[in-house]
Image (cartoon, rainbow, N blue to C red):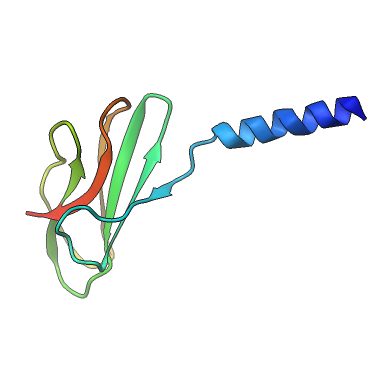
Length: 97
C-alpha cells in the first residue's frame, strides 16, 4: 500500500509541474473578441492573441517590465505570438497598435 501511495504522490507531483496554457484577462485595449493566453516553458514564455473579431485588427502582445511584441496586422481567425525569456516579465494580454 505504501508503494502505491508513493507512486500516486510522485505522479501528482509530475502533473502539478507541467505548465499548461494559461488564459489571461486582457489588460490591454484589444477588443473583447480577441482571445489571449500564454504557455510557459522551462526557458521561455510565449503570449498569444487570436483575432476572433469579424474584422482585421492591428495587434501586439503586451509584456510587463520590458518591450512589448511587434505590431501585426491580424485577419479574423489568425493568431500572433511573442516569446520572451522566463523571469520577472508577465503576460499582460494584447493591445491594439
